[in-house]
Length: 131
Length: 291
Image (cartoon, rainbow over all chains, first blue to last red; front, top):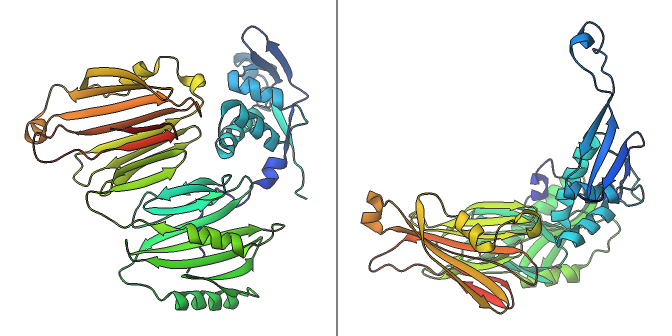
């Protein structure tokens, strides 16, 4: 007999409970606009001016102080649930019910999408300690 | 409890446990299941040449745990399964081993009990009792039930490819002589990506070098099933030797889970002697398809 559980893929943690307890919240520095016609959300995020953006470099490379990110249908749906009250687990459950998925199908999709929103500065995450 | 069938190994697990990791190999591999918070069960299989000494394996492992500093490791027995249970890091872990001569398979089952959840030997016993390994029978069928799919393919066909992504599962089996391929797929979130009728979608799955020769539609227990036959055109030399390669496929959306199912069989159009192995697939209690 062997401890085969040690062979589980290293990138897959044995438990993801703490991640499920996290609360995604809109980035306060971002402005969101909901287009009722298309049902899509456009989020305007401030760009941080990089250190290298000084003359003479800045004379030839344009720096935009903000960028617009238009979320697709699923992203717009997720954005609405990232309201600072729902945990990641709540959002996964809502996504699961809306699209008739299993919990882990929804978890994979939601977590991947949230990672993108966090990287783009659209959403921030409040980490809660496991009780 | 729900039934799982994988590589001739059958077992029953709680409904909410999902299959998250798998191996394709029928000789050595594993599958692992998780509840919504963590992995709860791992099943490993390995082909062995002779029946192993299960008692010795269990006691050797108990000794190894003691050497590693694990206290209170105990032998756990649920006949014919032999095992060891102990508190390891964040989980209480039980390991059981058994041998199934019908396929010369040794199975190891690892239960992970998270802190805060009461250890239940009765539950472990229920799972262990549900396990059976289907014997190998030439010209028989192997049953698979996983990822929401429930199907039978010919026993000597092997799992060549498996795609398991959110809302997209696709099994591909091949015969050992590589002449026959079976594809079984289940897709979710259908309104998000399917923007053409199902029959057109099915026709689009046919490779370019094949020509669709017939398309049919029928309704069976509220399932609108679309089927097609396609033959390789132009034919190549191998088609003249073994018979023209022919695709038989069906697709439908199950009205119960609203997922799209597809079953396809690619095989030479055998002229005489050899028969196609049937492919059975069920999406729910109301529909079982045979290709």
